[in-house]
Image 1 (spheres, rainbow, N blue to C red):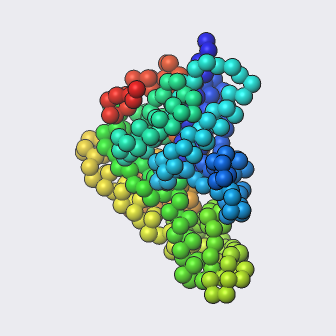
Image 2: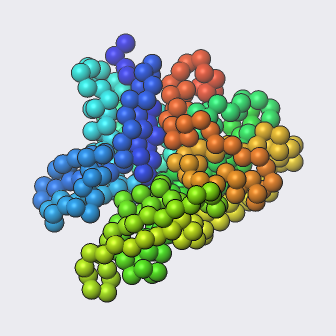
Image 3: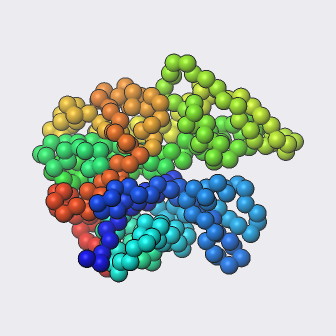
Length: 339
């Protein structure tokens, strides 16, 4: 009666929160701005993201997660606490049950850090779920069948590739290359080719507006602003879609290699199922133009993008909160919960 169930997709780029019975109630960037003079949190989420690269020396805007895992424990706990408070505003609950996602390839220490951060944020009962499982459930894949389903979740910090059958992961690969690496590749390309320094937000804007994995019709260009490396003055340059595609080619190739490696490790019967069912793409990386087509060309498998790919992981945690979902039979692969 006095327990509130919360599902959290704690992502490197964005954190999504859902409440049992209400669906997704919060979608915020995983960014915290705090005052280094007294360690007080000034802003979280969208408000903090607006401050990146624009703060005075006394305020630091940081992303406390890197490559899908916690890089700054205290800041992550403070961010989670603020998100929980916003989710439960106007309500009085003595207990908070939280289902929270972690990458499939994390170590025991990294998963323990997520658990402890959630505990410090105020959660009383914490359940860890691997992201590929949550993504597959959120995408509506029939993972409880005696047949193989393959999901590729390309987030901000990690790309998760998993083959699932009978409600558990058969084989999985986790690579710490994803959307953030696309942005970093664009930053490095612009610096080397145009002698221009740009920030994360500009790189992300370039990726969204003209980025692609394959050539597409009516390719355009975009004018970007930054600081000239030569004289230190502000400068404008034009960058084309072809240049952006070339810049991102290496991280994209590494993700595709991981998909191929996972397929090579898949048992033959399940591989046959994947030929029939295809590969499902989730996460923000699934929205990159031509990415699904490029994966299909390199694997020979049909590839589809899940409906609402950005929401699949948090929708999977919402399913975990439902008693009759079938997801309650799933046990975190390490066979225990932290206590």
